[in-house]
Length: 303
Image (cartoon, rainbow, N blue to C red; front, side):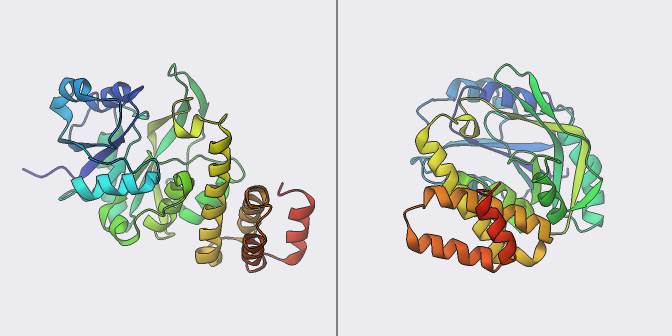
């Protein structure tokens, strides 16, 4: 009997919507997946749900220490490294996101095409839902194949959307690159899309979708905290700096300008009194785009 080729990893901490996440997996029309749940030493014991959905859970582990408060990406890595053994493909599913019932089926329908074209990253279509499961945003279909750098550049002009949970990637590429340790993991998933695909083609599946939950209990929804806003700006600064310093040549000029705007918009606020950091980040801009464009970015406050 052929082993399941895909691992679904849930890095667990928040219980609020976990049952809906598990229900979406129980309702998969194709059961050929292994489900692993790694508890980041949460104060919210999920044991009752683990027992209730035991029939679909391959393995559950409650880790002794919480590392997500300091590094979300390290928690993702801990779960993958702990659980994944034989599976060739992995999806890291947030504990409040859901998959449409045909996601695993469509993975198997498309994986041969991905492998034939030497593609190492597959994306489901994404939609945004709120606490009440109401769809608040949907996106047009993607091309069947699209270069990762083109997809990334389109995010700046609101063509598309990208989060952690809709990406299926080859385990070998994860082992090669891992996740970048960015503050609040802001951009860690987007960097992974670029690195795990090695800036090649992404295969898009438009007839199955991941629902990203935008709520006050998820990290991305916690917008009212001053500490969160500051950490987000640090994360965005680290995110843009990493890409501009390591992969500037991979992006077209318009995308680099947009990335530079984002970098300036964030570092000028969070590091406004740090002279050395300002020198460092301005040097990154100078190596990426024209001085005239930097002047325009400063003039317009990064907008």
